[in-house]
View 1 (tube, one colour):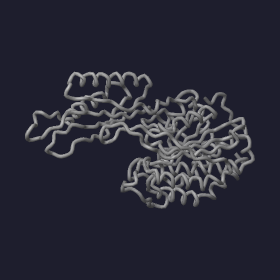
View 2 (cartoon, helix red, strand yellow):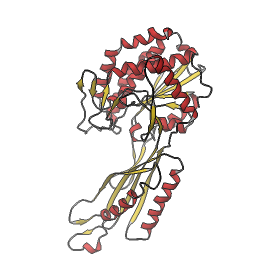
View 3 (cartoon, rainbow, N blue to C red):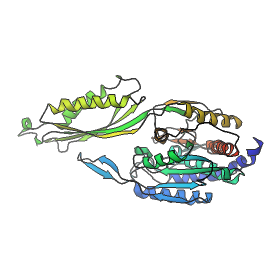
View 4 (cartoon, one colour):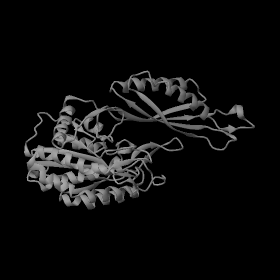
Length: 407
């Protein structure tokens, strides 16, 4: 441990700068669809990651296929990704991932960070994942200051679309998985430091129900109310819950209708699916097909399904367990107890595993209440987690840690 102490102590000297970065980055609205804000955030990242003296690039991503308020497929533009690679020909290659987008759009009321107490900062993205980006940056700076840096190559990918499924950046994650030996992703840990182990998979789907418009007074009987039909559909969809262990279906958004004296001819039902087993995909799609077939027998209505599965389940496989054990051993050297548990959440760690790369994906800050206006980061975890990530990297680079099969 003595070999690494001075380099880890340097991280402690960066505590104030880390606080400043997470607070200032939280003030940048980088909601997934706020392209201007994402561009500002990308520039802020470039201004700070440039000190790593590594080739850096902005990468355009393909648009995201979505369904608009009229029930029509549209291509939604997404922001640019930031990728940095150093020493790509070193014998050991490590991927470090995080995202710059948040769930808080530019019109969301939650925009400004504030201190709850000396050690707790409440703000958009402070835990998910801007605090994690600060941890990643300082861990890499510590590595680059160490005498072992030349033995290890690394790749950073910071994407702008993780909160909407990483569909546009998935090809970049696949490329990274193919050329790296293990992955470190900086999603937030729980407030007590517990990491996510096995993760569920996820999918986003949209049902578009079309009926027939009519005057609600003069020709009510001539109309076919799409909202009422969608309500029946929603009840059938919700009834899928409980039929398969670990599979949940959440109706997240319903829209449709307009003037109250018009029988509505359009209703849109948007939902998210979580599944524990890969085989559940086919089973669920069969349930959806049965519903579509039932509505085909009612010619006054048209029902269409859009969407797909965005992330496969990530199991606690033998390869993933090896990476967790590496983290646990490194944590023990710092006096940090590392534990993990299964979660229904998913992230880019799912994507990496689907593309063949073993990884641990909650090396970011300790925090909580993510995706809500109560989101917080525990500020003392910035240095703590940066030390943990830096120690992992230095022990790998020095040869102290060797894993027979990272993939």
